[in-house]
Length: 161
Image (cartoon, rainbow, N blue to C red; front, side):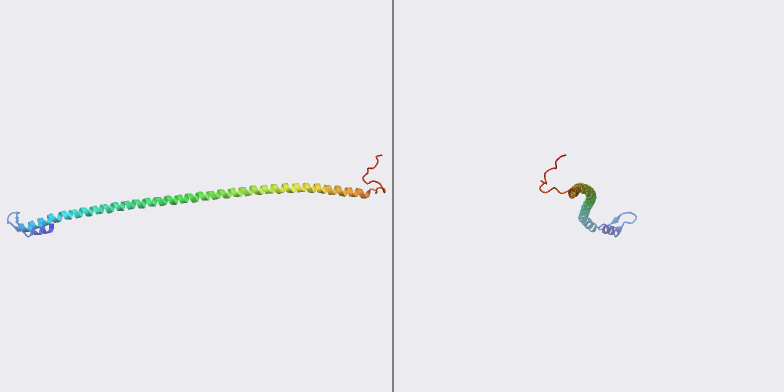
């Protein structure tokens, strides 16, 4: 529209020796009326475009903030997962060490019990061996002793002299 106005002014008749020009008033009025109609709608269209641009930028900003928040949350979850893995590893190591210590204690207890049982068995065997030796000795002594006279009470004790 401004270009049309500029063209109309350029085609106007110049008044010699002055800066004045003669223009077609009807043509100029029509252009001005079109300009009055077109400019406000163009301004409103521009304002609407600016508003849409501002809305798009605000939406993009919110989306970017949401993406950043999601990324922070995911990073926190990953770090939390890693902390859980580390804690689980530490707990597993502690349980393994407790198991080893318990197995060592039980092995020592089993060794002490086996030693005690074997010592008790050795004492019983010594006692039985002593009884067997005594029995053998008694048998030898009885075999070497003269047999009691016939009719004598085998349970009677010998007269003291």
